[in-house]
Image (tube, rainbow, N blue to C red; front, side):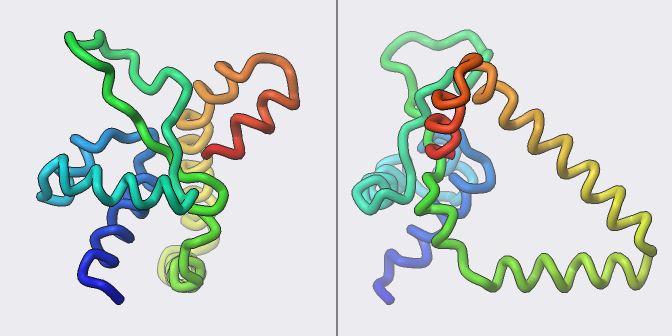
Length: 141
């Protein structure tokens, strides 16, 4: 594993978790320079793991200058997740059920579903009513 591999994975993890996200936001979270994050972004784009988000990423008024690019994980980026994440999630859900009961697991799942719905609603809305366009847009997430 190269020295840059853990940082590259951290950038991919952030894109998966927070996307659409800018290089500047990732740099701040990771404590790196924006230029360093952009080098990893370029590598991840070249490998097909992330892509520039084509939808409207922010409702905030834009500052002067070139708009910041927002990145999202591609299907390939998502499939690159290690099995460790699934195993951890499975164990965490089992632990929550054991400690707090099945209702706590149901409550967590419902809350997480609402977060996901809010996150993807703009993507679905921007894709319009055509199911093919929606499917095409969902592949970049």
